[in-house]
Length: 553
Ligand SMILES: O=P(O)(O)OC[C@H]1O[C@](O)(CO)[C@@H](O)[C@@H]1O
Image 1 (tube, helix red, strand yellow):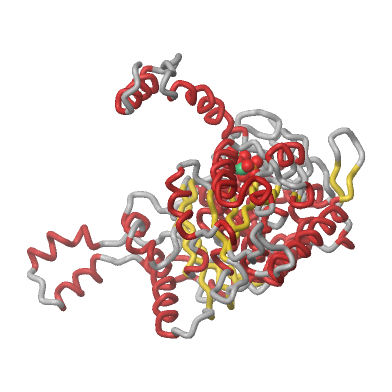
Image 2: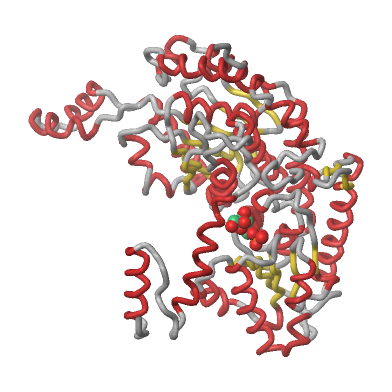
């Protein structure tokens, strides 16, 4: 049987991963004092250090071969050309058009044939967003009682929340023009926690939903609209509402004035939408210049992704590292550890970006995948992570690859704190690599005067296996531009993994079943409802909830 180029490339990866010592990192440093120099790359101001992984020249060459055999470059070019790369939904994928000037000339293929001018509609929407933002900030647009808007509440979930929330958290300062707040959870405790901080006379409400049908978002939008109406009347409330959506019919049915609807297109996936109208809360909260810089930074990463050779291409390299860990070494979790508090929502954003994109079990052709796909993504900002889950990364039974994001220069004057932060980030990665040997632990305990029997008792608990992989991304500073670069880097990493695994990284059918079942359970929880057909566990739980709420079964 002849193997295809892809199969051959995969076979090579698996073979390399089975070599004795594969997965070991420390010997690679021992053998090559220049390893850091040879295994770090710098592009777009981001330094990517992959030397603390077990990838050596041979493995890197094999991974690059896999990328070539998987036609990552050709697929990338097809995406940039606006072809229908989201095959199951028959859509082009053009978030890159959102941050490109009109002269870039992005076009989106239409399923019925022909193309639409993506860049033209992006430019038009951006200009409307810019004017609206300016008018809100200058007070040309005011609330129903003539007061200026001080707060903007973005009501959305998933990609209509996580990206804008992450970016606002990173970019907002006390000097920013408005306070951006985010309401996502259908649990009204979320709204109850936000409401006391808001003055209805000064609050602008954005309903952010690509489809404008998402149950959680619509439930929250009705609650907040009701609050505005009670305080301002129906007509007054309308002056406080805007929508970010592709569904103009539904926004108008909800009562949002047509000139307050900022649209985008189905070639923008939810988790890639923070650059579109969905990012309006970033512009309003942090300022138009910041939003523009965010787009410009992402654009610079797009240009790098589209033009850099594979061996220098940061998104591709990040993807190949993950492929090595998941498929070569069988490591199925991945930690995101930003050592910058402004990036505290970054892991949450990447959770959706990576897991919704890459949590797939069939190929584009609908065949079962032959390789594992997306790992579990989780994370917290350092140093908080160290005091919660890092124990498992250091001494748990399975290595968990981690991305450390370090920022050399802070945007605050507390140099001591920043040194402490960086020292911890560097130390965690070093500890994962280096580990701690029996000789080291024994010597340290002896020095501390620990009796021999106590040393023997504690020794196994105090050993660190080391040789655990991590990748470091080092930024000079974090600002809107570099944030744009960082987020776009991960977006393109996801694209590359989708191509390597031959899956559709742009659909999300896996979220549908739960939504459908929730619809059928909903009436069963009403006071006069009845428990329907379910598995015994679900039926039992519904019955108990009805009991606890004092409703008959
Ligand atoms: O913007 P919408 O249409 O409300 O969707 C919100 C989110 O829901 C999802 O469809 C998943 O349920 C995400 O892909 C999306 O980001």
